[in-house]
Image 1 (cartoon, rainbow, N blue to C red):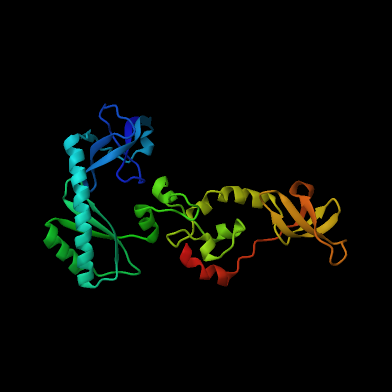
Image 2: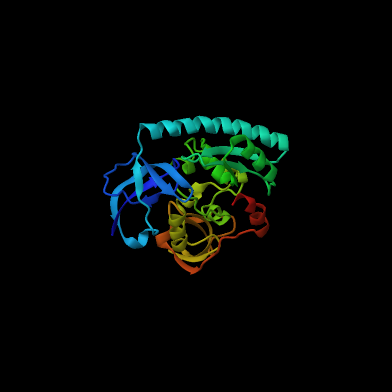
Length: 288
């Protein structure tokens, strides 16, 4: 076991472990630590706790110090510099006529590097731009291409539900989301209905997927042949949430409405399957 603190460097970013060197810290404290990209200032997300050695990436780096007033003032100064750097970089991108969209600028705490985050439809040759920026800022320059999901996570905004983006408020890492999930949850496969503001599948499709997977395992699918209290029939509609089925009974005359049963009242003789139209799925692959 080892005592660690968990530190975040972005508002909703990955948590990294550091050795507190015996200092007792609480969530929200600012600390100075050494990272792979140099000295950085981060916020304590997890206060002192003991964790098993196998959960630690060795060597565990020690915290340098608790951030003081000068450190916090330096961070604030960097924020102002980032705004200026953003304007300069946008101007340079226009001068070089590059097809890229600048998203964010980040100064490292020690000012040894400036990171420029951008999105683009394809690969961009930005070597001339890097040289131009290096001549302006006189420090190391790194341009990092990110995806539209990462862009939404950085910038934030409101989702179709009216709440702030999940990725910007509490999601540490993106979870894989697929068209199959939308189909299994009985959602319309219209891109407008299942896409987030970023233009990709909504992350919240993942939240209830385990429940839907469990319900699908226990519920006859459309097309299943079942035995009901009133005889054998074909499932023409199911409602996973309410646990009800509409069954067209073999003994029913033509034109009679299907009978409704609870899932527990029927026995599956031959289950159906969820139809996945290949052309439809291929047409929506860009959303994943």
